[in-house]
Amino acid sequence: MKILYIHSNSEDTQFYNDYLNDLLLHGLRDLYGENVVDFPGCWYLYKDEILKRKHDEKKFWGKGFTIKNILNDYNSIDREDIHQKIKNKYFNLVIYGSIRRSDLFLDDVIKYNNKFIFVDGEDDNFIEEKYSNLGLYFKRELISKNSKVLPISFAIPKNKILDKIDKNPESLLAPLIPGKLNTYIYDSEDSYYEMYKKSIFGLTYKKAGWDCLRHYEILMNGCIPLFLDLKNCPNDCITTLPKKELIESLTKFEKILNLYNQFKIFKKKHLTLKRIFSPISLKSDKERLIDFLNKNEIIFNIKDNLLDFTKKNLTTEILAKNIIAKIK
Image (cartoon, rainbow, N blue to C red; front, side):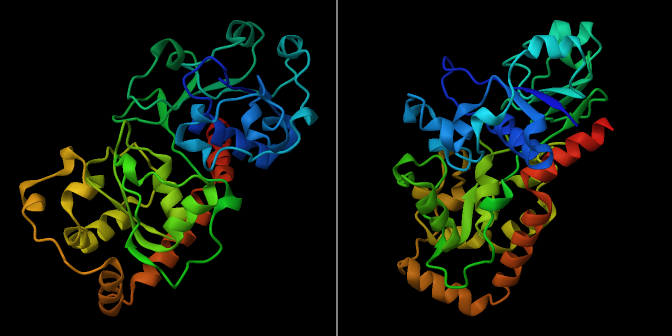
């Protein structure tokens, strides 16, 4: 299958990276190799090309962790004569990886009867009807049923997923707390991953949207997400996550959050009166960890099961397969 992948890559945007757009491209390349042509070329995904480009590291959302340097051989992709190839129906499929950021060539794609789909990975729940009325439209933050729109979620490159869980954890709760910028201390991808590998739980929750790459980064490192308010997530949003198991984990283990200073681990919107007035444990994190492990030997089975689920269901390759299956 020959695929033209219209990327939104632009030097003028606030941030270079665009998670869903980037991850789907990676999954398609895993499946179809150089038959997937990204245009314009997404330079920061390529190990060789990013080194050649003058760029500002501050323009990578999330420091570019998990996204940068995940493809090889930028110049091996034939990006010549794209317009003519569209006219000749050279491609079996045209994918707009971020339709609200780029609809490049769309008039001609339609004019010359090319098969196409749209992907909308924005944080909001808005659906651009001028596109959803034209063809198959995948929406990340899909909060209600829509006959013209299908759900889509983030994923993880399979080579980033931990092989097996670390059975010698150092923290009960991962030190990085979403929204608490003073905990964003990790300057390298390896140190960021190591923090989750060495923790039993990682705190996460809905931010701008329900879907967030952090959920997957916690899972892929053998850590258990404590996903606040997940029970309120719409059915058609983050459909690939093991919601049932994560809700059960939160219900069973949420009480461990009471051991911490509530003002340090919760943003204002999550600070209930019960949490504010809960007694703070005077034990060290190591003591909390030892106490917890002595009472919860089953925790490593839960970590194993979630990591296995991640390997089987949450890779970019699976994401791409699911999209292609919907078209066929």
